[in-house]
Image 1 (tube, helix red, strand yellow):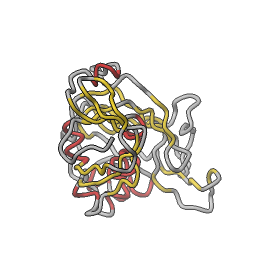
Image 2 (tube, one colour; image 1 turned 180 degrees about the vertical axis):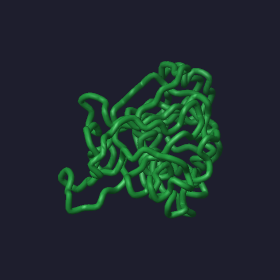
Image 3 (spheres, helix red, strand yellow; image 1 turned 90 degrees about the vertical axis):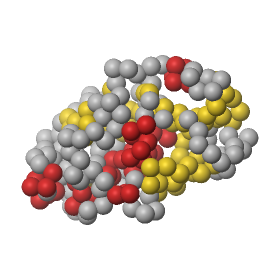
Image 4 (tube, rainbow, N blue to C red; image 1 turned 60 degrees about the vertical axis):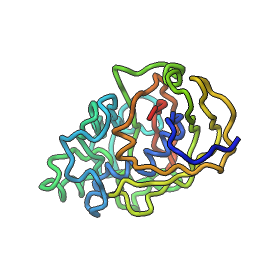
Length: 239
């Protein structure tokens, strides 16, 4: 089916959550974006930037996962970097250069994400750039997937997103993205008709979306990001 334009409750599937992270949220939480003065989070450390349901961490030491490694491209230890705790911004992704350069502006940040990612692994001919390792989520109120759908009378399940961009810049929060499959209408708390891929364009603010988050699922689906060296253990989000 095709759906009429309007405001709908949305459940984002794990691949759609990973797309939002890869193209919008993680870049906004990276210190190179802060240095370029294009992050909306520059002066928000210690403040609420998301629903209290959301805790998000980058963990480069999880055993056996794609993004795990012992040292960074800066030659420093990897580890666990809390980013958002119960909705509060507590940290940033950083390499050694930006952690030192921006310490006076954002406070102390341990540089655990300076990586020399290249097409076929890593290359010491490249300068370190800032990349996530394994992004994980936790919430004491996470529920099974069906419980996310249950209260929704009419809404949309977004299975994946394509061409996600912030045309006016990340600092505005405004973005648009094309809904692709597998996506479905939600009717009376159940997945219903499939939505034809490419017929629906999502327009929102990721800053508002984080604040409107009403639920996370207990799902932890591994989704590989574009570098093929970073991973998101993604739940479903209800907004």
